[in-house]
Amino acid sequence: MGMFQFFKHKCDVHGHKESMISTLPPERPFLVYDYKYFISEEFNAFTFGQEYDSNISPMETLFQLRKIFPMPSLTNRDPSSVNSDYSNGGRNLKNGYYAFGCYGSEDIWYSHMAGSSKEVMDSSFVYKSDYIYNGFHIDNSYKSSFIYFSKDCADSIFLFDYRNCIDCFGCVNMRNAKYCIWNQQVSKEDYENFMRINSPFSRDFLNESKEKFWQSVKSNPMNASRNTAVKNVTGVLLSNTKNIYDITQSENSEHIRHADGGLSNKDSMDFLYSGGHSELLYSTTNIGSQSSNVKFSISSKFCTNCEFIFNSKNLDNCFMCFGLQNKSYCILNKQYLPEKYFKILDEIKSDMMKRGEYGDGVEMQFSAMPYNFSLAQISFPLTDEEIKKLGGYIAKEPETNAGNAQFISTKDLPQVINKVSDDIINFGIKCEVTGRPFRIVESELQFLRKMKLPLPSTHPSLRLQQYLYMAPLGKRHQALCAKCGEAINSLFNPKDGYILYCEKCYQQEVY
Image (cartoon, rainbow, N blue to C red; front, side, top):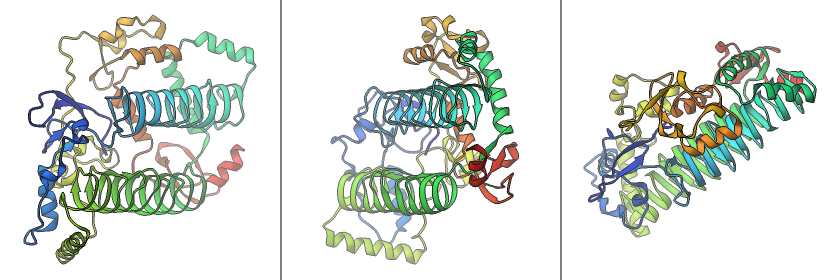
């Protein structure tokens, strides 16, 4: 899985001269085809088919096919999505711009995993919510900004772990609240005066409030694991799960071990991201959508009884294949009758076992994504030298293609949104952190005006990555409950100064 970046480069299909939007960089060591062509009937993945040669290591054979087989410019994007060229993954998306893994949603900007939502910007894991800015793990909420781990909230700003609240500002750990400022109850008149004085919100006011808000978060107890409705589990960010071990972020799942990101999954182990009622997965990445009994595979869906498959869809009984759709009984991108398929399959697996090759997933050299732009680099950073030694590759930052565009520094941006003119969309803005330029698109400007929020001062990719650092992939911390002393799993690093409670003590404190 890659970080939130897009590149523009030439499509490698013979005769194609156009540039395409891609999650893979120009430095990639393989061909990349435009996604629409890759999934079309024009592209015949069987043209890359190979006979199995027992004189060559099976994994070497697979890697040789990997090197010559083109990769799609995007991964698992729903072709029915509308006006969402700058999106990757997800399904049923309309008007998505820098949207990753979003589904059933409309008007989404710079966000990850927005589901059944509308008008969402700079957010991650937002469900059934509308008009959300800078939200993280939000459910059933409306017209709120800078809210985290909250549910059933509306018309609020700066909330942490809130439930069933409306018209609140700068509050932590409250339930069924209305007209609260910095965890203090105020009158309706005082609250409305506070909002009227400070709206539209200036960048300086929000920055000062943000600093005060996070100080408040750290001075209040928090649910270390963020688990709800669980039984016999070890992990964090779990809900409606049971009998699972060493897991980060899973819902409606059971009997899984050593995994990150599972939705309605069962009887699986050692996987990364699995959505949509899948089972019996082992050593997979981004395998889902009702897949079953899939091993050692990457970026495929609706697959059954498959191993070592990549960028494929709707397969049954396939082994060591790339880019196939709606196929059965295929090995190394060649199709066989069932009887011959199982005979060759037995031969290959026997050879792999003799060579000690069977039982583990593929190595880093199979990854299409440069390691320095992968999610793994956040949680498990490596030097360039270490990446190359492990068989990975490195890419440069995407080019800006700014040409002769005029630029504005963040210090020259208006403090409030009502001072921003329409022509801002014609300018580039230099990120105050990295110096990397970015632009404001028209729909984004209209959203910020509705929310009365200032223009952002940092690059979109940096804003998206903040959530990766808040809940790093595969990172779970050991801590002691600050109240009862029980050993607990924590999403948050105890070294960062949080007051961490076990779930039982937290419930007693808050409810």
